[in-house]
Length: 227
Ligand SMILES: [Fe+2]
Image 1 (spheres, protein in one colour):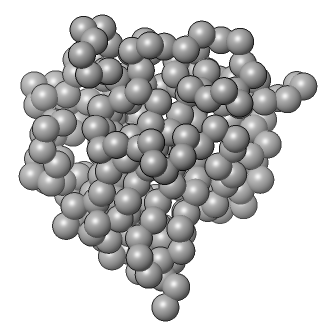
Image 2 (tube, rainbow, N blue to C red):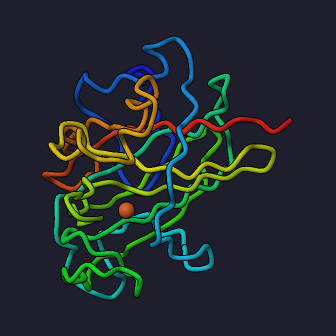
C-alpha cells in the first residue's frame, strides 16, 4: 500500500476512528518486496479468550460506561487482509487479544501478579470492509514473564478467518523494542518473514479524529486460499 493509498484508506475506508495518516515511513513490506508475504503462524498462547467473547467495539481503550481511559500509550493498529496474490479480502474476521499496559491478560490462566486494568477491554473483533481494511484502537501492552530468563516483548495476538482460506493465528510486535531480539517465538519465524509481523509505529496525524499523542502502525495480514 502506498502512502497515498493509505491516506485514502483512512480517509474513506473506515469511519468513526479517524481520517488520515501522517509520516512517510509506512511502506508495506509486501509492496517493498514486490510480493505478499503470507503471514507467519505463531502460537495462540494460553490466553485466547474464546471466540464467543469477542464483540465489534474496536476501541479497546475505554470500557463503555466508565469515564476513565485505559493506562498506556494509545495506538491505532490498522491494515488490510489480503490473499497470497495481494488482493484485498472483504468480510474477513479479525480478532485481537492482548495484555494491558502492566503485561497482564484478563485470564484466570495468567499467573502474572501484575494488576489488571479495569478500564481496558482486552479483546475485540472486526470484519474487513470492501477494501480489505480493518482498524483497532488500543494501547501498547506491557512485557510479561514467560519462563525463566525469558520475558515476552510487547505483542498483539491476532486470529484471522475467512471462508475459503486457511485460518491464521499470529502475533505482531513493536519495531525497535529491545526484547524483540531475544524473543523465542519471534525468533522462531524464518528471518525473511519476520519483518512482516514487526510493525513500525509513528505519530497519528492530528486534527482528523485520532487521539492526541497517539501512534499508528500498519499490519497487513495475508491468508492462503484452500482452493
Ligand atoms: Fe501473549
